[in-house]
Image (cartoon, rainbow, N blue to C red; front, side):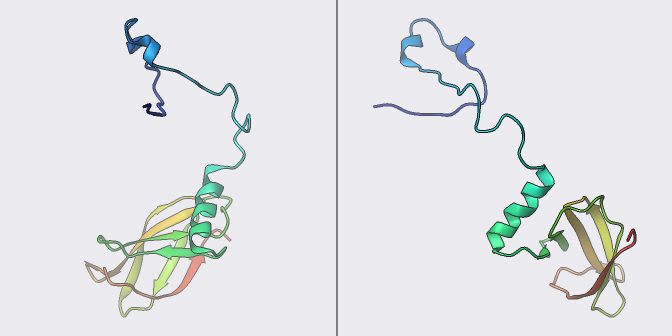
Length: 128
C-alpha cells in the first residue's frame, strides 16, 4: 500500500534517517513552459468564459452583501472609471473595486443597499 501526496513545502529536512527509506521525493526539473504563458487577468477572464461557454461580459450577483462582480470580455488597458445606471427609481451604483479584468459594484436606493437582482440601463467608461 502506498500514498501519493503532492507537497509544496520541502520536508526532506524533517525526515529522520530511520524512516527515510519509506519516502520518495520527485520533482520535475522543468515544467511544460519555462515562462508564464498567459497574464493573470487573461486567465481569470478565460476561466469564467469557459465556465459559462460565452465570450461576452459576465455579471455575477448580487451576493449576500448586495455586491455584483462584472467580468469583462477582454482585459482593459487600465481599470475603468465606470458609471453604472440601474433601472431603479432613485437608484445609484457604487463602484467598490475595479481592475483591468473585473469590476465590483453595489446598487443603492437611498441609504439602502439593494440585495435583490436589479437590471442596469447602461455602463459608461469615463476614460474612452
